Length: 429
Length: 122
Image (cartoon, rainbow over all chains, first blue to last red; front, side):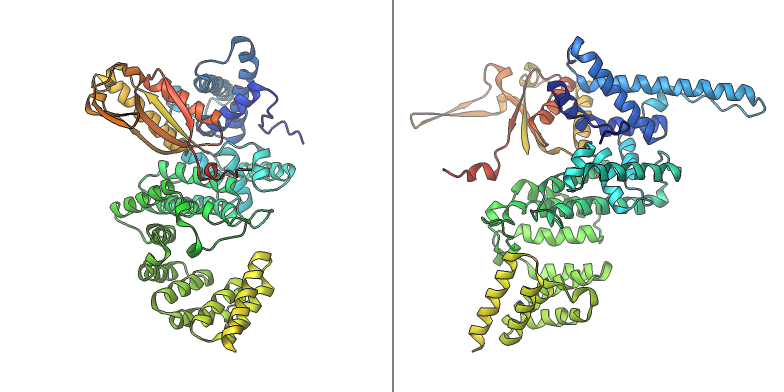
């Protein structure tokens, strides 16, 4: 695949490698700025690409400048000003033709060119996560534009052929162009909904990495890393938005357990069985600090902040026995009220059982067997099996574990379920 | 992967001369930019060595020396921990920082991760 409109530098030699790194670091801000200056994504990408092409031409002779980022940004700015001037000249000609048109006041060029970087980046993020795009298109476009990944990198991250991703991105851009989505910060009234859409993309990318639905590995840390980068970016751009801080706290706290979630044979290790000394203290510290910040800002009861608060209860417990299940149960009660779902209900059941005993948990969990979407969910059977076993209903527990074993596609999980069923049989007889 | 980016202090920092308004603005701009890049995990700066001490151990003998220390430019002035893809990416951030705040030297070192300690002896 060689799509001329796509910017992707394949590392051939040192200079290419160098430019690929600079693209990763500089291109999101450069494209964001260019998009405000020029008004549309295609021109912005084109000029950014031209600035890098200029470097490919100049640097081999002149040497790489001491401040390559500044060189690239200055070049991009120059190219953008040139483009705007030429457009204005064009427009001037039209004005001569249509002399009756009222003269538009000449905007100050410097004002257009040097705006507020944070707003530019936010505009780029809002555009890439625009609600008119499909979820797949949003994540691909976001990783490419906002994380500065090449189309190849995005394809690798999603384990999808490069041509598919390239098409998806081209189509997304066409959709944006057709809907005349220009570079604009949404008005205050739409702001909250648009931020919701951005957070959704970030959490989707994170979850695709955290519980990979495809690929050989069930954790894909590259996707988690990109989601964390995006989350940190967004939190820096809207530092007082409590739900965004909640999302960042949630994914940092979940990511803090990444390396403890994989056993020595690559098998998943459940939260309560994890070696907590392997948790990432820096991420936990950051997560807890953001939760404190949410409190200082007046608190929030949004779904991300609530889930973050639950994750924080686990993070604060040095050993599993110290977990504050009462608090977790209360937080799940809140979560079930504001964003009810069968999976939240299942987790609420587990927490309730830890806090108030297996029977209290079963009261919440058993009705879930009547929910159609849950009937084939092996974890429901596994959880019910566990609670039944703890309440002394060993024969029923055994049946549930066996059902869970036939449902899971994961060999290790199947073996675990069969083991537990066998243990129940032993205690029953 | 994580890198610790450590900048060395200038004579002015060591002399306790507070950074000029421009320098402060430059540092603020850098921190904001690093935060907006989504790579900054943590960072701190340190005061003049006159407010610090050094613990030296020689053959098991411990000697505590109070600051200030000579060779101001060989003392760390602060650090940042960045989460990036590669050494090259960390270096680009370090370069910007050095140029923006007028630091003469910045070391970029990879942070040891849990996995590094799990090396199989075979």
